[in-house]
Each structure stands twice: as C-alpha cells, then as structure tokens.
Amino acid sequence: MSLFIDQAKIEVKAGDGGKGCISFRREKYVPKGGPDGGDGGDGGSVIFKVDPNMQTLLDFHYLHFFKAKRGEHGKGANKTGRCGEDLIIRVPAGTMVFDQENHELLIDLVEPNQEFIIARGGRGGRGNTHFKTATHQAPRFAQDGEAGEERKLLLELKLMADVGLVGFPNAGKSTLLSRLSAARPKIADYPFTTLAPNLGLVQVNESFRFIMADIPGLIEGAHEGRGLGHQFLNHILRTKILVLLIDSQSPDILHDYQVLIDEMEKFSPELSKKEKILVITKSDLIIDEDSLKTILHQLNDLPCCIISAVTGDGLTELLQLITNVLKNQK
Image (tube, rainbow, N blue to C red; front, side, top):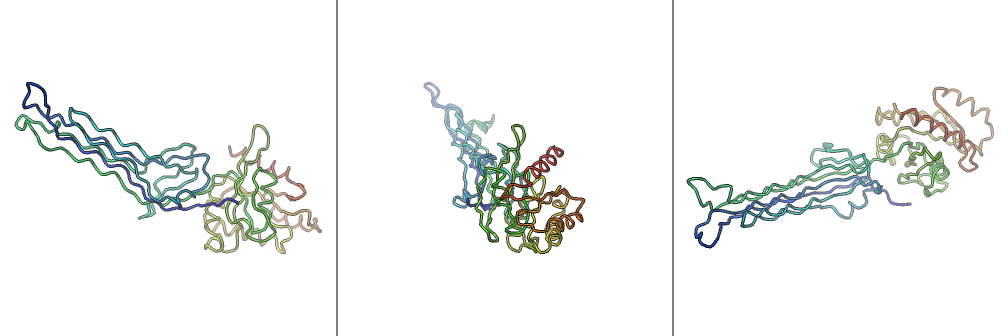
C-alpha cells in the first residue's frame, strides 16, 4: 500500500528585486554624459499549482524550503535587469494552505491546474536615470530592490472523492473498493488494515464514472481524536455522498449505525447534511435474513442495500443507488 501523507510544514521565499544601476553615458565627444543606469529586474514569485497526477504531500517531507530566483541588477545604457523566474510548486487537488503563525486559511486548492501566488517577488530598484533633476544632473545613487515575501506554511490535504466509504475497522471497505474499481488496497481479516486512504475509479458505464475513497476505519470517540479520528473525519468532509458500511455479523447493527452518525455529527455539522447510503456487508455470512430486514426497517428514511463483496451479491443494486444520488446532485 502506498504511503499517504496528508500534512506538511514548509517555508517559501520569493526572489528579491535586483538593484538599480548607477551609470553614466560614456560616448565619444560627450565627456560628461548624463545618467543611464537601468532598473533592476523583479524577483520571481512562488506559485502553487494543482497537479491532477499527484495524490499525496510526500514530496514535502523531504524538501522543506523553496526559494524563487532573484531579479538581475540593472545595467548601464538603460538596460533593465532580467526578472527572476517564478517558482512553481505542484500540489495535489484538495490541498489547503495555512499560515503557520496564526493558522489562517490562505487558499483551498481544489481545481485541476489551479494556480495561486503564495509569495510575491520583490520589485526591482530604479536606476539613477530616474533621479536626474534640473538641479541634480548627475545623481550618484539608485534604489535597492525590494525583498521578496517569505512565509511559513502548513499544507493539509483532504481527499477529493465523490463517494466516501465509512465504517468500523474490518467492515469490508477495502474489499468493496477492490471489487468495484481498479484499486488494489491491502486487505486482511483484522482491524485497521487500512491505515491510509485508498482511491479507486469506478466506471459504471461509458458515460458515467466516479471516484470512491476507502478511508481508515472509524472508532467510537473519533471526533475527540481517538484512533485515526481527526485524520479520518477530515477526509470525508470533501466527499459528495457517504456510504456507511456495517458488518452483518455485528451484535448490534443499530448501535453501530448510531455511533457512526454521532461521531460524524459531533465532528462537523457538514457531515450530517451529506446524503448517505447504508450498506450491510458480508451477506454470504447471514443466517437469519428476516431478522436483519426487521432491523433495517427501523431505518426506513435511509437508502439501504445488503451486499457481499466476496460473492458479488447486491453490488449492482449498490452501484445503481450511488449513481442515482450522484446524478441527482449534479
């Protein structure tokens, strides 16, 4: 399973502006030419750009400091220095950029190829040409370039998925994702197999597809940060709909359902407003299906289906439910 990194601290420094030049014309037969010092070039800016091919912030755990090029100094003969090249920092969609000092959100980068200038380059200084006056014909001074902006930043990544799979550890989320998409998450029969989110592309037909996220298992007390608590709940904030998975072998399905709902509501009111589908997993292990249907009847306000990711039973019905909800939202 690939490592998923969802938070990183970095520093960025935009380029300083180049210095203005102090220079005087030196031409034949003009022994005392006027000032001709050119301006300094502007410093390069630091720019974030969303890269659709990136999925983690892993790169930023090996490189913490980013600096754009400074502007060149001005030259004689009124030649302006070349501007410093901008520095493009590529990030995955769903990256939120905060100021480390006050935790202010500076930008939420969600659109493919979206760009944002996070630190502006300094302006180049003016050459001595600009300071010539009627009473001061030969100014022997010029401006220094401005310093480029510096920032200490916190990057946080939240998954960009249409459908989030929510459930307790070992509820069958990874198995379901592997059956519906081309994703190959690590799967085993013990809690917390999934320690990092997995994304899968689900192709329903030629004209419709969606991104599904298998997110680390939820436990009671997650809103307080227990287990993988805040990491888990942060990621499902982005999803359009939630699929709640409950193991058919649970001793109390209604209790499990209520815990999932309570944990999400306590963490963020946004989650309680999202459309949800309830899925009972491992139907191949169910002995008393009538009792199960009686229990589910008490949740008649919620779309529900019973599936087995192992045998494939109910998967077509589930896909149709998800497709209908997503299309209605669009």
